[in-house]
Image 1 (cartoon, rainbow, N blue to C red):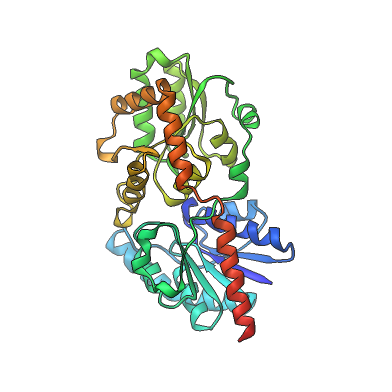
Image 2: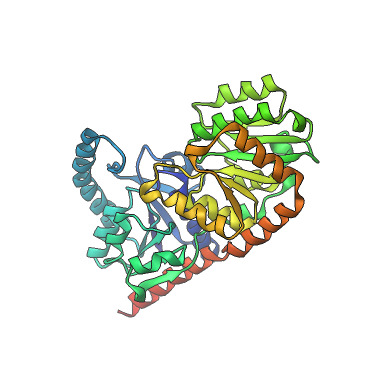
Length: 368
């Protein structure tokens, strides 16, 4: 059996796809997984590293770009139609699964029109335009939040949660301490701004160090910066005498989560799925330019449930961040309550549910 998993661009779209691929392979080692994405997305380097085949479409995003880039992206859409048709005819998939991102829209639509079983994942509270349109054509929609239900046909919409990679749930703190050269026994703050880093978070964390001299010997940081800010952030930690490890990118996220006492991050759907599956206390700083402000909506849900703190990017400062870190360091009772509330929101079984639905679609298609 061949399965196409389409989408990517960012880790938030790609990682659920990798989780689904792993679940298919665990159930049947003979299943062939083919990813479809773009050469400029994170999938171009991550998918081969995970041992899967990837094929590329000529596609670009149209949201949040200049008028000239919009025209270019629209022109590439016609090319992606040709690319999608060629890939489908060559691969002959049993099912095509869309995980989001601009690489998924066209190939999902064409697969549906060719009567191939199709399903999409919607990771956010408020679906984007592409998935709202695709919801009319695909055979199943797997959603993360109940708030998404009104946007899709109820008969084929399933509340599954957002798939989390199995190894994320099995990280070893002992391995993490060794891997990242961290000290056992120190309160560990894990900072990351998504797969590409986040400048506002990087700068706020650096600024916060000046307000935490009293904690310098009590806490340490594991900080994923992205390539752009790596050297400046690393030098700031050294200059101010704080312990920890600074790195442009972390592949071993399971170990990073395992050593973390608290997490400071954006509020992408995949990040929140991982945080809640693990029950990690978090300070969330939503990306302010996310389509439909979906990161803020996602973060507010955790805030309302007492599972996280939220700081709007526009209000982010080193002083306020230092205060939040210090409060969570000092108060184990607050952290314990956040862990309990976070786990209550988590859906570690989401991946199995998504693949169960996919297998059901396949059985029904074989009957036809």
